[in-house]
Image 1 (cartoon, rainbow, N blue to C red):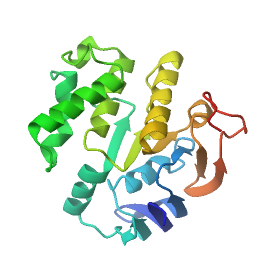
Image 2: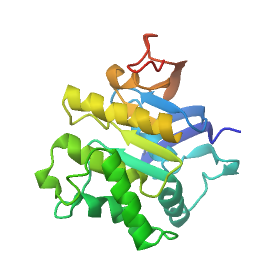
Image 3: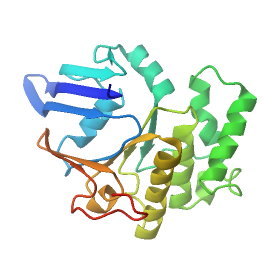
Image 4: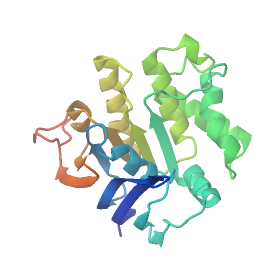
Length: 240
């Protein structure tokens, strides 16, 4: 059974009498442990699809199955609970609290979830920051960190509640090319070593080459679903 299955998903936004269709019948599945690039130009529908996958929004019609349970009809509170337990998010703009240390930023999602003691949460946050290379920056506020370091904090924060799925929306869009490669290698590492399921949302073929599968979306429709890099070459590190 696929971890996630979308069946004939439509999403239409309404403003008064005006309807704007964004997704026009999207069907796809995501297996546990996949590293997927969801690729499309601006306006293709990729961000809307990511918001649906991340339970930030609901489809107008269609079915969303997660581990055999149909969840498209969940209310806002139920979606929030699912996000806190099963989903992690990384965004282009980092979204860190400005006057809060790296460690405190990583711990922030724990405030909204139950089941982990303060001591356990802190120990996990420290381990995650060490793993993303910020052992000596835990007590630094974002203003004292580089863009790459801030994104590393955001990655650690996204993993604090041990999500089943990590959604990364243009995660290297604000970074230079060398730092981008370092961040993408980090996603590959978490996928390879932890079996973390990751969807990288991007318009950039250079980002997509780090994925094991590329799903292309255009005008609200899936127009391609391919294993490996778009041009067929192996990604750095030998991952096709």
